[in-house]
Image (cartoon, rainbow, N blue to C red):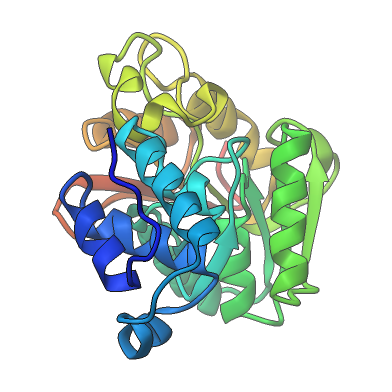
Length: 283
């Protein structure tokens, strides 16, 4: 049973919480309960905390102990340079996906056009990061989930990114007849029976955003098959995938007729993104 938190200072609450959860989890939960930032905590850590706030923080700590992701408890997650709203309807943006954004920006700078599609946008992380860095780009973000798309729209509005158009539908369904200079996606890529789906934060994230058939590649196959009909000559397809799927995804792109196929490693030197260029002469 937890101790009565009434009358404790903010830094005392934090110290007690760190006995049960990681400090990297406890601090953002405390700041969320307080409605303050780190600068306030540094300056006012010895100030007594209202009972209601202390109790709210205690409830958050207990939920984190039970395994709920911090991002869902606070309703926010940092990605690229943006603070994004997230919900249980969206995948939690991860730092690994920033590699996809970096590669997309590099390729856009070498292309004559700036039309981008982000498939399965979730919270809008990829689309909004690209749009924030390239204000002249026209970014279309699609998602099958109405609830997820509502979060993406809210994030676009909060960051005043008017060059993002969020559309509801699975993969290319909302993009009939349209072509792009670059298509990016972080689709589901975990095998449906992978035991990791029952561990850690993944237990709370939407299964539809994680699992994709027996080998995790069902959705990637669909995207690779349909992408050429939506790419301008010389346009790029960039796909995030699992660390052990680089060769398989590269093979799918090559078999479909993509050129300059390459797999790129994340900061831990693991295969993370595979890219390919669709030339005007490809089959």
